[in-house]
Length: 312
View (tube, one colour):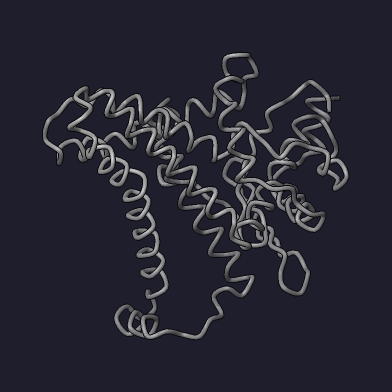
């Protein structure tokens, strides 16, 4: 691999049997259908605060970027699920109830409830459970900052165990393989190589701008900020933790953005734990998966022009 690395600005995520790749406001979802053909959908997503100056303000823009990434990610996964036939299951009693209650809007309402439930479960697993477990030690640890540190370490352990547990599932392993294909495609062109299956196979599956690294930064930064919460009321402690989530997301976005465009020693050291964690969340893809990822990249990004401009 060449030592020169140029940030392409593109990013994406793995979906069911495919890859979503985003470049500015355009995004492409490539999915390998059950008949073996690759379906490619190219469209645009303008964001919840499209056109607002707030999307350019450091630390604030990260909050909206996080929201946009979540919305676009859910859309992409739902699209791939429709294509791959996951939603072809027999209609349940709950489905009939929702259709009777909300008629044509039943599907949107159900998706909204699914998102809401996912957020509640995430808050329960990574905010409330670590806080509860650490509060058990409150009688032994009198220093609130030290207790917040213990809470943060418990959160990190839960996060790591969660990733290890889901990585054992067959479907999630395939998702992580597509995640690896996405990273390898981006690394391939950012290191100045033509986007071919053979070149992509040689590229690294680890990338500093990965969402896994972002989540790890969220965990670490939350430890630091939660150490400054100095209130005795348990309910207020929870409220302050919830209120700090947008702040944590904003700071984490700026850190991951810096990591993506910088290659100095300090930034590389900060990125190292996130890259190590990607050995869990990415797996080596097969050639069919790489073909899907390449199709997704080519849907929104002129990599030939990029190589000519950046690498001559």
